[in-house]
Image 1 (tube, rainbow, N blue to C red):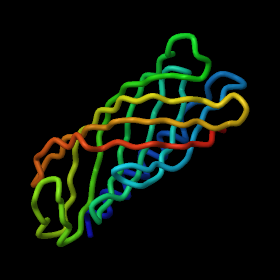
Image 2 (image 1 turned 180 degrees about the vertical axis):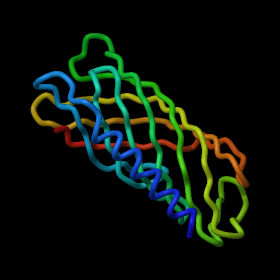
Image 3 (image 1 turned 90 degrees about the vertical axis):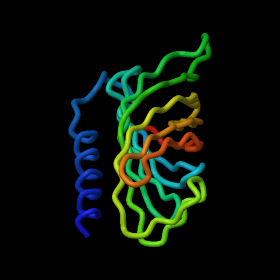
Image 4 (image 1 turned 60 degrees about the vertical axis):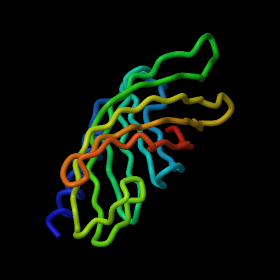
Length: 165
């Protein structure tokens, strides 16, 4: 049960950080929230400190467990296409898997409830729609898991659709 408490505390800390950060430029859409669909299904929240500096929190389910990720990203313009940016970033995650979770990517079954911390990288491409406060992105997010898994997972990626406000 203490692993669940640690994960909830981690999620609360990241959410508090994102929501309490100072406001950016006047007129800039500073937040984005939406869904994420890929190797895991979940929610994503972004705080745009500036057009180039973004904090992102991702919560998603995968392999009968769930994971919470916090990332810092640097967004850059692609060519001269308005609204099209690519980004790169890094951060960390905390995952929880219950007893008997199958991890087919590692050919193993987890024997007990387990809390797994790790580090993440992210690279992606996103587009901000001009006619609506929406953004769509595609990313690849390799992660390294510490603890009993002690493995590199390069199969994590997703498409996200977010509402900006």
